[in-house]
Length: 88
Image (cartoon, rainbow, N blue to C red):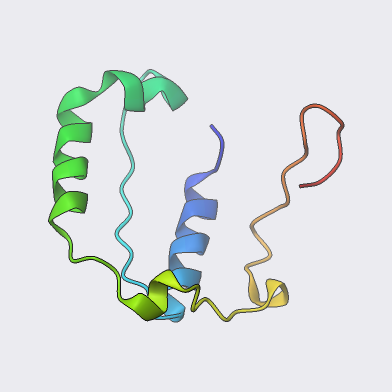
């Protein structure tokens, strides 16, 4: 898995704190990360919901996110590059 549920929750909360509408969902599947390629019934519901949401405001699309990196939750570790072993 690329990001843990806790990391996704932390990102969603940070975005909400900055006024962004966020809805988060988790696909339940024995296929792990590949679930988005195989779980069509679950994905169909989520994509239809996403497409029905109003478009973000112009302010949101200009990058209104104002939290500093220091404000990010400590539970979200930096990922390492697979090619060089250096943080991204």
